[in-house]
Length: 197
Image 1 (tube, rainbow, N blue to C red):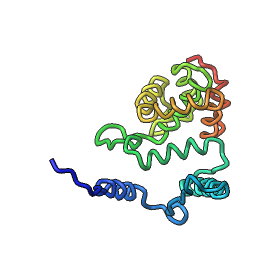
Image 2: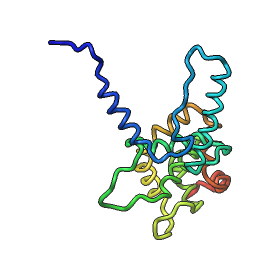
Image 3: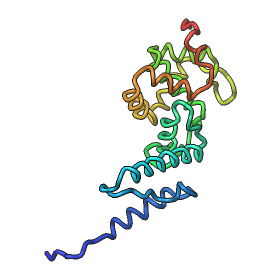
Image 4: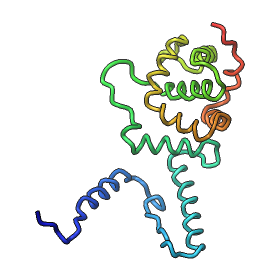
């Protein structure tokens, strides 16, 4: 076996080319690579990098339609970037059955908020969501609590690890605050609605 003395960069070039293809569509400052100072750079160069990172984060959030000043902006940014760039966060194409509805995302957020944030059981959470009437069938008909639980169980498969990680990092109170910020003002009603069926 003969070893080459020349380094082989073809795989690295292919990986870089593949990564560059995945992130096309950004313009302006978002398309410009960061200039990382050397480890011997002075503080002013590192401060400049920090300012550039903050500016680019704001630009990226606005590019994705996220208000950078809103609570939960970084959680929403992580979720949108994961959905855009990571195949494991993208929905699988379904050829048969009921098409997924955008309200399933809302159902997951509300259920996670009521169970992890407020301590309700899934059953209690689904009853409160049903009573609130926020989630309906495609034809506008109300859904039963059992149907809401089944839809939640299907929808959470895509987002379960993300919510577990957020909950572990933020804790119960901050988790509830972030999820409350991601939906509109129907939440106080959900907390006070009777849980009797």
